[in-house]
Amino acid sequence: MQIGYGSLKENLQIQEVEIPKISLNEVLIKVHSASINPHDYKIVLGEFKKMEKLSFPTSVGSDFSGTIIEVGKNIDHFVIGDEVFGTSHGTIAEFCKADVSTISLKPRNSLFNDISVLPVVGMTTIQSFNRIGGIKKGDKILIHAGSGGVGTFAIQYAKSKGAFVYTTTSAQNSEWVKKLGADVVIDYKKENYLDICSDIDIVFDTLGNQYTFDAFKIIKQGGNVISLLPAEINKQVAKEFRIPKLIAFFLSLKPSKIKKLVKDKNATYEFIFMRPNQLFLLEISNLVKNNRIKPIIEKVFELNNSIDAFEHLAKGHTKGKLVIKI
Image (tube, rainbow, N blue to C red; front, side, top):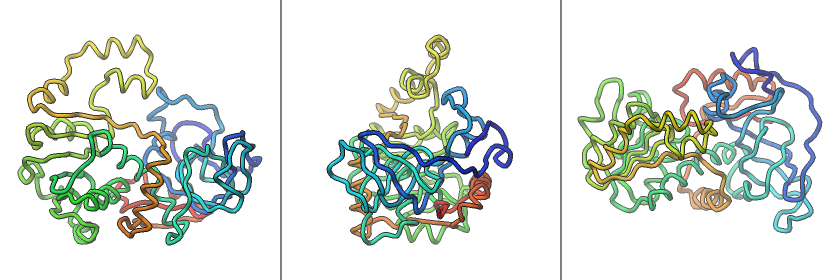
């Protein structure tokens, strides 16, 4: 449970609470595994407190896999005993509830730990490429931070579509990132990706800030830039993060660097705010069934050590995902 904003050690606690009560369109799940994403620890640190209002204490976590133990009265396509995965709020717990639109059946060939790491990173990636019309065979794509949670999924997903993949990572991760399918691996500590990449069809920007602006230097005319972090405040960003209208208005008066870059390259730019989608979960399930996606897990933590998992992720440079076994 999160009890406030600030340091992870001081504002995360393991508490005993009541089992959640479900609505007509929800299921109750006995959680077997959960995984954490950067957004989860950044909430605790207070990086989003102006955008996401919380009442404390509040449960934490969003990815999960588990078994349905109760079904809402409006639900007829899931039953008690179904093994599922998906997203919800407060998944780092023995039990969580989830809207039926945010879950899917677990692939039979996957373990609970493995499938629990894929919902957020998988839906983020699939939504990103759907927003720009999808990648196609032969596209040249740059994926930043290829050894991270999103990066490891995105490399495999891009290769499943027949793309030629460039990615950035450290030298120590180079070989195993290549095994995921990356065609060109760039050591960001020693090499400048701007000197190596050119005429790129899609830049998948997982880092934001200057990386977003620099993406336009290497895309081809008519190329695409997809960013997981907003480079500027526009109407879409203000709406997604619930920025007060007056503040958003004054921020919008600043000249838009992105608009000029888009115009100069006749490009497409998209900021992606992931929204759960059952069709995306079904696509993830099919990719796993067909062995096109391999979940990448650096370490598994027990529930009693879940705060350690948050601190580990916050240090950065995690290879793939961290799992909390319930």
